[in-house]
Length: 175
Image (cartoon, rainbow, N blue to C red; front, side, top):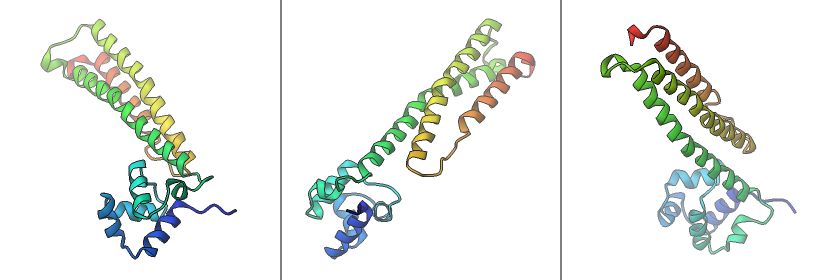
């Protein structure tokens, strides 16, 4: 039995009911662009939207999700990608704060060499989770067969920060 994509089911059902994308969007409280993306297979509805769509289109969730479809797995992967982005944010913010602290020593008061070294070691250690979350996000994108975005962002940040830290230690009078 050929697997039917959910995008096809959504489009067929909407047309069968004589609704426009805008009308569906209004009834399930999303944007018209979301409906278009779902119907074109660019991404998938979240679980709340799936429930609303099933109700609107008078389908069971089983009928909508189609047994054997990769939709459920793709939704899980997209959710994990969002989690990876959210989990990386605190590490990034802490590193940015450390950079500001190190760079602004001239204005806020000079730190001891030991404090500066401890901050730099902390910042470097903080890049481990950043690197992990970015790599995991990229692997998840590959699972979805989409082109990874910002694949070298974390590496670039690490290089810039290490360069800045080295400059602070070697030439402290400029900072």
